[in-house]
Image (cartoon, rainbow over all chains, first blue to last red; front, side):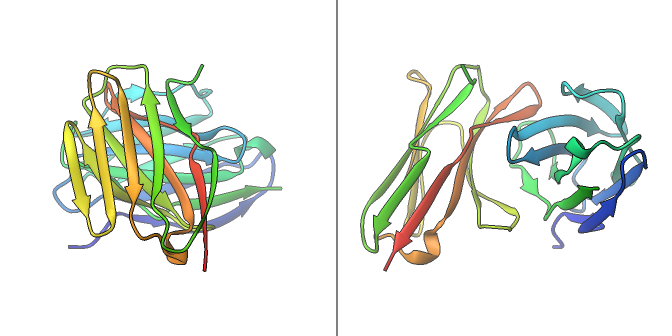
Length: 112
Length: 107
């Protein structure tokens, strides 16, 4: 069974640009969550999607958005990039709420 | 005060030593995860616990729901165990992470 995949794995952007990250959960998993990992703040929750609906959102500005498609694949978008957006973005999939969480390899975003 | 606290923040050990990492949480949880992250690497889930104790190889995880405390033990530690260990509490559809414990095991 294939694991959680994230694309791209590495990305370099400049301030002011926008970026879209993609996550394909494990087949059959309907819940996809996104987390940001930075050296200063550690791992922080961005949002969670279940069956195409955003169920929960973390404390991030509106520049961070996401969506989930009918095949459970998810994308997150960050507009008007800032230097502080440089981070590892992790996608986590699970069968349903409160089930075991499976982590993707992450997308490392560098904003110059 | 963080909702999920880990101790110690850093830990060094000699190969073969018994290691304990502690995690305390102040929120209601449905499960607690122990995660491992090697330098520059991704995150791997080691255990998901909602009660009692789980064992996998040299790793043992326990949780005391009443005391809101969990521990991760590594028996007969090895240099390949060197990594950051993170506990994460599953609360209202999201994970709340501890700050991690950086473990270095020397031969």
